[in-house]
Image (cartoon, rainbow, N blue to C red; front, side):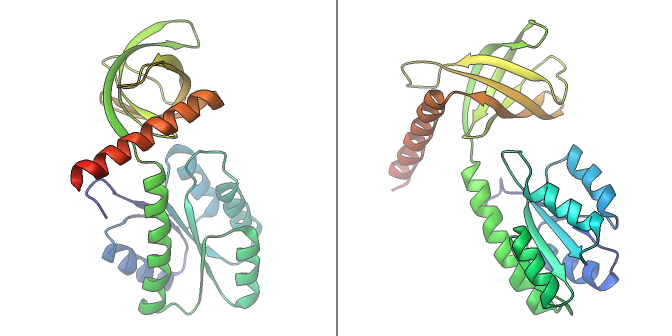
Length: 234
């Protein structure tokens, strides 16, 4: 794990054994843990914050099924990896059919939990790499839905979104549109982004809209950055 990869996990369980073993295994991987016994409350947490990993103690009750379904079918561009803890092979089959990434059966052991989380961790790393962003520090004039022009700086960009620096107070959920000229690129790309979080003068946003042509241009540009980085490190 690089120093930039700080993963967060939500553990949804009332089982003391599940909580203690998972906390031990997650701590070994330096993954920040938040516990939530109630799947309904867990959905409220996930509505406010993205989690890299969701561990659900799955017994098949409707609230747990609803939680898994919503996480697995999320339209967010970055979906949480899901690990289901189940009591028996029947529930394991159900969890796998639902699309869960990793399944582990009770009784949990330190060894089985570590192995399952290693699998989940490798998936999180792959997801993180797909979401890698490159620093650009480009000032732009962004337009909000009220037609106001806001001077902001695009700090970094990836296939799924941007980091934004702003002296103005921005609102989570706000939509901003702007044209952006990437370094060494011939033409600008036009995007609309939705703010996911704001801390101090830094915000994170995912693409709400980008044309297929501009997305191809962005992906080509990002690929050129990766190749350039590999050559410079060779």
